[in-house]
Image (cartoon, rainbow, N blue to C red; front, side, top):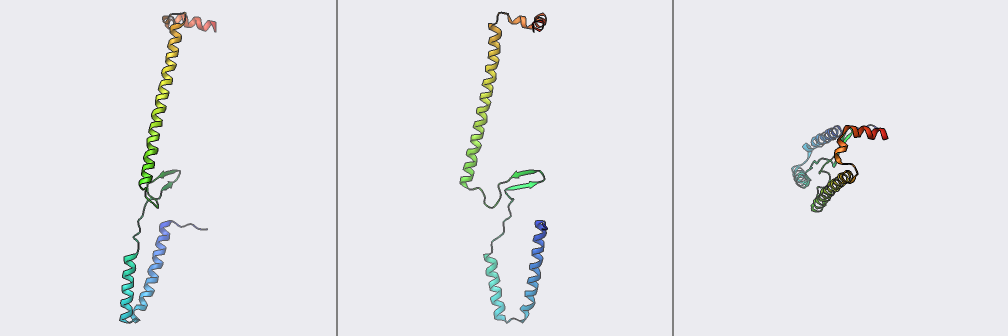
Length: 141
């Protein structure tokens, strides 16, 4: 099965349409004035009623190994879609703030535990800065 580029398929369809229109126009010279006018009026009504094609970016655009989510697609985001996106974004921000606070509190508690262990130990804190004490600790291990 051969896959064509979307633009190539579009060009081929346009060419076929132009060929068909040319063949139909060849036969219009033989038509009466009344029939020509009815056809013209029908064409004008059809053109007035046809929908204008709006091209939007697809929701997922993939190229190579990357993908991006866009706002386009078949339907645009309505009020409910925008509201739900804002609620999801708010929940994400609140969650990130909560995680940051929790991690900051844990780190402060860990530092406080180390400080408390140093201060309540039998040795004064200045002993930990003494190079001889570090050698003493290494010999006992």
